[in-house]
Image: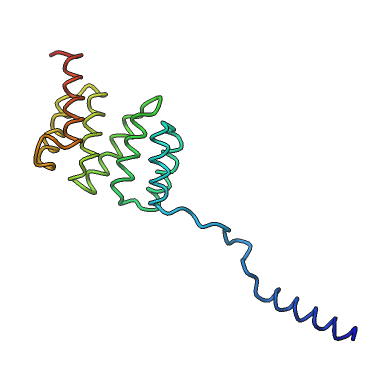
Length: 158
């Protein structure tokens, strides 16, 4: 009986040792998808947590470098952080527009970045593009950029 019990224990051990359920290098939870990272970044943006947004979006950009939404939100986050990084904002807005020339959000946001850079004529070029993209002057991106340009002009009369 004792030998039988030892044999059974050895058989059970051999079965569990021979086929581990998880290898040591297998993560216990899957990495977030790009869509999940975008959602997390949008929540961070709403909370004005620019560093968290940038961190999520940088990973998303590595995973999907041809995602215009990722680059647009990276530009947005760099532009609105406590110390704006306009060079990086312009870089990512440029990538977003290269990937999707009709990306209304990127046109709006790059226009706002040009206003921060004291280049209203460049902002107005993007406003004109928004009118073409939207087919009118009432879409949200057009209205928002038009208001920003008007506000800039009031503060900086030519």
